Length: 599
Image 1 (cartoon, rainbow, N blue to C red):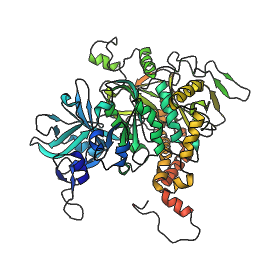
Image 2 (image 1 turned 180 degrees about the vertical axis):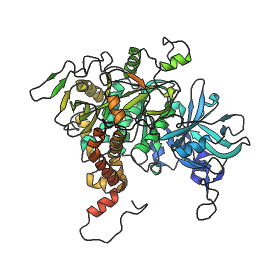
Image 3 (image 1 turned 90 degrees about the vertical axis):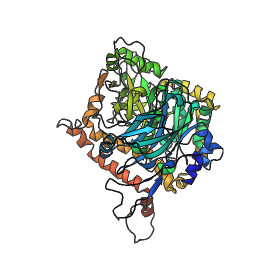
């Protein structure tokens, strides 16, 4: 707390008891311990540089904020962990958003409170609004407390916020929300959130280090104007080498996550970053891509809603061929324009559209989808990922993967996000679920495709354009660049000798396991949206609506074994150090199984 206080400068410190819902003493009858609320702060770039003891912060260029979660008391009986606090300002609106992991007990306790935000001098005070539990959306993972904040303070880097309870205005916590707003432009047509990369050095096709530079360049080619990159303090040094040329052009801004706050790979951490990114890009991005991974590419086809296979043929070996433009339409060009075209083709609107063929706000909202959702095709990654871009692979599965969809979102119309659908949105809006003939994700995630495969040259046709753009930016062709990246990496044996690095390399595996488990739980919903042939406005899976019917039971039954394998893999990630230890034994050894906190 002394380090945090020094970094914060002159700041009021409010110590609050860390208590459970049962009272002021823990189960042992001891007095509660105290936490200094000054720990909850997001350090801006400039104030921390001069005397910072954090080497990672000092070295990161274009650092927007540092995420540091903290536990604070918001009432006599409720202690919460706030993951991050984000200031957000538009031309006529300002607010501060508090991000918390969702559970129904916390939601019910929160809405029962009367909380307000106040400035230090008391000149501003506003009621806390809560989002995330008010809809019937299934699989909620985050919730947000939001309070209005004076728009006149939009140029400040830090905002000290007092959380007060009740009509007596009892001060419960004092927090600071900081970032460096001058690093971001006032507006972007389309932006992307980028989570930390993973590394699998013995499997180049899965290497996040190799995927990151080509993915950034390809998306920039298609109209993405900015990337908000989340970086771990222990990130591979090659990540900054890759980002440098994008940073120099102000195409990338970074947010630092301290490793102590990233304890679990997969959905939990990814959800935190996606929602943090949502609020940092509110008022700035018209469209946001919050959860698309580096092995996933968008393919728009806005000029035709024909089936993807139209115009293709079948070879003598039974492999179907798809035309290079995915069915006769245009798949290249600007993604912001393509997204607007998808809406316009359905007589729908973008958020903030000046005219929409509708009269009144209510009518406008009913014609404004908050997101575009789509299914994904599974592709094999290239046979040699050092010599070829991911998009040069043209072998994919025939049908959409039986996985939950992904989406792009209009930040002004949503409050809270899950990885596969928004869970809180502006009343009156819905998601537009788009058939794969118009929009699909191309997911380069496997080494092998089953016999019912399809040759799809849609994105492969852009490999030459990508190669030329890549060479202009990096000064050399992809094979030479990729080979140099590999040469700088650690050997597999060295990497896996470190538990933390091994966990990082399993980041993607953990997410895939979670995806497969979700696809079983929401089998009926996935079947429905994958089978759409026309764009359809509807809500995400709602609580109680995802029951599997008798007809659909076979889908779940067919993945029973896969679910068990997923559980095993998840365990092997959690107990990676223990597994490596016992697998490496050379003599019978007496020892206990894994114990709490030992792994």
